[in-house]
Length: 276
Length: 296
Image 1 (tube, rainbow over the protein chains, first blue to last red):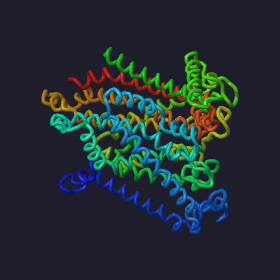
Image 2 (cartoon, each protein chain N blue to C red):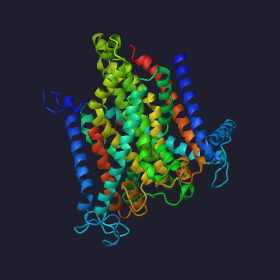
Image 3 (spheres, each protein chain N blue to C red):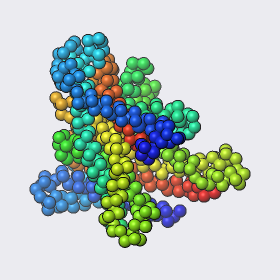
Image 4 (tube, one colour):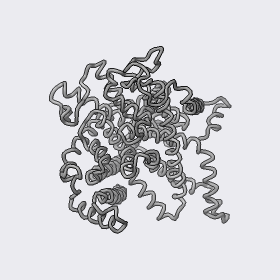
């Protein structure tokens, strides 16, 4: 369902679903602004140590407190959010291309080839995306973490796009088109344009939520960002030894990460609990 | 029913063959000359497949221990964690799924569920650890693996408290997947046209729900058993890392970091195989429920 159709529900009054989607896009917009201005908004450069006392709790001087090396947590969270978003964007593009686009096109290939592809991707979809991402990074390098996250989120997206395309293929307009002699490639182009103009934003937001989750988790496990370039997952992993005594070292990066994923999920129009 | 089971078993069998080929390809990377060209890799792949056929997964590049032995030692710990997490998922997920699946409760709980769904599992694990340590004064597992005191069958309250954190982390992730499956099935069941027909036949709402609706909703949960297993395995990998639990998922992550492909491949194969088999069992168990519930 598009945003326009949801918004027009009940005589022009936007439904709760539409309002939540709008809130999601506003949230993502605010995060984009924070990421663009992170160097300006942060009071300290990335990874600058001994800015304040060690493990100081949140105060007027250090609103998010400081960590074990005396780094300002507010500045570090902003820089890490920026690093996370910058990795997640190319990963989102990979998921859309390899998952959504390829899945849609694959469904229109000759039946036996299409079903073989569906089965092959189904094998990858039966592996936890997190472990798949870890494996791809292990086979390449950490520099490929964004591509690995995009590829590991792609099987699920592929299967969803494939199944949608198969439904489209059996739709009435497709039968009329075939009956009137319109070629399969023209019909595919038409369906692709309609599919993507209708769902590109929600698909992108959905993919963003999925890859952010994977990227931050692989970073937490030590397979993502390489110090000194820290993303939110790595920041939380670094706080693991002492967060029981200094909660702020993990809580603020975790809150920033959760907000990013939450806004992406809302923007995608996902139902509560629905898998991204 | 038999035709359905045979068709699904065939599909799962093909999937398992694909998983074996993939795992053997990863195992072949452990061969010293596998990177010397396509031919050498194919030969190594063939050797790995031959080894797999004889349940020989090679030896760890780090410890020299046979991969099968390592798997035998670590996999039960992960499976135990996943099974205990699955129990939590059912105990929490099913009532929550039914309670918040429809009506005003669903609308009231929606914002909270959205936020909880957005929280990565490692953040949830750390939050649980923080609450357990600072509010409940439970011991939070430290050190490495089994030495940290994590046992699947706790003998006293202290051991139970230590085990509860990873089990809860895995269980909550599974509960989220289970309640999602229930909500999806509930929405699907609510849209069925036979509801109107049954009402016209004079059946009450309670009778329609219990005799026809509930079996279909449970069938939806069973059909998504593979997806629930995926959520449980992902959560197990994170929980084992967070709580220093020496299971197979933790071993997988460490082995990938060390490029110990002989260890990586059987673990990957086990996880993929278990997910596929769980999916098969779930779909087969759902079939009679759908047959009785959806076709009154």
